[in-house]
Length: 357
Image (cartoon, rainbow, N blue to C red; front, side, top):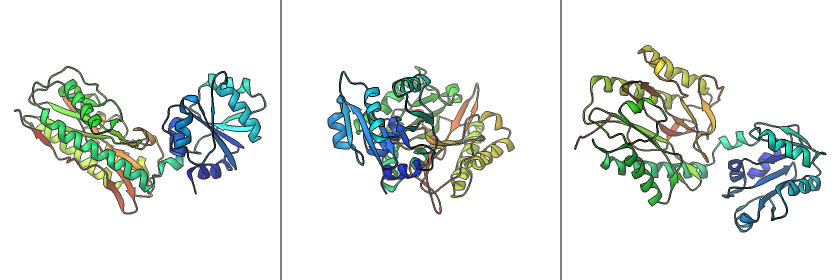
């Protein structure tokens, strides 16, 4: 069964007779299209891929499973949608809940015969279960990310700025044919207590924690890796905090088994931190789905009921962040298998003390 057919099958149970897909990540997953603008109108037994004249040739080359229709000025997307909904004979059409109110209003005004209904969990649950082809693409992105971190180690030393380390990461990934999946986190010293710190001109100093969080985007799929180093010399406090985060991270990876609830994995990590008096220093969720976007579908958090299933790809990234001192985060990308988690990246995660050259 193709991806389009799988969505059409779910559409029959969604209470609508059509589905308009505008999320470009859903569209890319469904059809293989890599452009930035398209809509897909699906009915249970048909559909159309719609784009504009910028992407006519590209869509004809890339799109699988649907006929392609492109338009050019003076036509608009509203004109084409009106024609396609009439052609398909669909009157109750579902749309993704991320659509803005203003867009919904334009559709309602342009197509008064259509009843537009927000729908959830039609495409997204299918995207969460990765094929082996998708997992291999993520594995390649992880390998490039690992290589970039190995490369950048050689420039990490006292006196080097966070900003220069970030540039070196980006340069290496782009030189190898990839892109950044997101802006890297490069955070030294007190800045490492900020989970999503942006690189600054701050220069590394002996005794700093240095947290690097980045990932390559390669062949349409993302990696997301975090490692924390100590510059020059580690104190007992460095070692205690790092050891606790590492212990929790390893235990969380081992717990990611089919049938487990992600909320329970998150709770286990918080309990470990709480036993040592550090619970208040872990504020974000334990992880998120990973795939075509870096924060893909699914969350591991105290408030999310998240069944763990074979084929899901997750980040596992506990952290402890102490204002005025620094923070530690350790993150791996894993795929859930029948026997447990397979870690997709290979960069070591023991405490690394980088020499003060």
